[in-house]
Image (cartoon, rainbow, N blue to C red; front, top):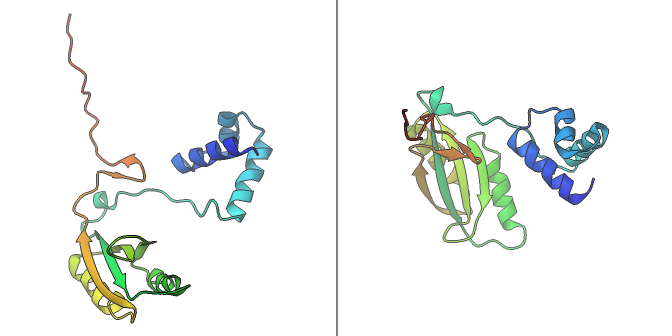
Length: 164
């Protein structure tokens, strides 16, 4: 599949991964067998790393909180940062982990039932890692948009009322 069509396919899958290969094929103007083969190839190459629904847990769970934890580490050489990342990513509480530039080396999205649980996770699991020199935690208070999806329930019609 040509690169431009592949890019379109990936954007379509990213926007709604519940569509069928036939629906993707129609949108792309391609044969379904070509689209199916390309999706399989992209999955095998881990370009498509997985499929997931965006769930707004605030609407389901009363006891649910997320935090972004910035982590600073001792300077690492070669594969040192990868080793630290490998240690951190294995914890089930870690939803996302990124190696970043700036004043900290990593940022972690952590999930838990309450502030105390997340605090305990940080002090019991992240802080004791020998290479970790410090953390800074930011608790998420509200979400408005995630993965490009607006999470607000604002279905209000903002058009001006006109009457005859």
